[in-house]
Length: 320
Image (cartoon, rainbow, N blue to C red):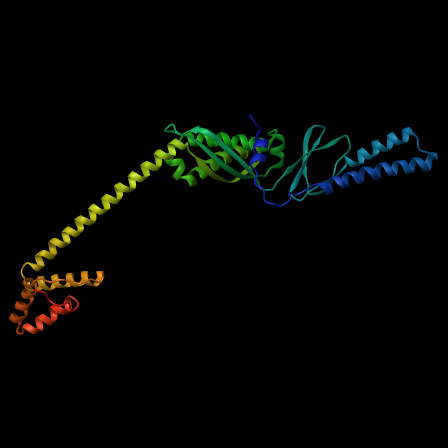
């Protein structure tokens, strides 16, 4: 099994940007060492007139003591200083001075926001479905003392704790809840990690689930189930629409029952709409047009009824 650090390096995305470096601080330490050793050799040369093996040894020791007494802490770092093995103070950023052989500059704590990638492979949900889940947690150290004293490797601890919490959260939820309620899963993981990591001086800023992968065989079954559900919903909607239409037609038939002329005009209007949309020719039986002629005669003029009928069907001539 690979360590959390190795897994994080494998999934770390390439952004094309160079990461911050401590080359300047290392160069400063080397300069301090060189200055200490050089001054020692210069003083030996002035006092004794020569430089021997003992002088070189003393120069190296003085340079090492000087380099271990003056440190450069970067802006985003905190230095944890121990005195005789006991916590003394948190120093930095900037120049930090320690007593040689008495105080030890043990560890530098990075207090920037850190992204840790983690995942749970083939974890069973509450309905016994194995899933693979990838997530990322954003966190930072708010107490350098706790991060250095309370836990050995706080970075690895965050990774392992996040993975364990993810497995526990997935085991309490069904597959549908894991897939459809990512926000709730993110919030639950964040609360769990905050409760446990706060004792180590670590604050969890947020947790984001990146991807949820289910087995391929189960994907096909889920797709078939989704298609069947959509077809069922579509048929229910069509049935409801048919029911509404039948109710409206029933009301309309009641309105046309006592008015024959209105029914005939409605019939001609439907015929006109069919011809208008299709752009074809409508052949009207003689009995159909005679009904409109009779309606027009009862109203006073047969020619006017013929004109109305002709206009309704787009001026299509009657064929007997």
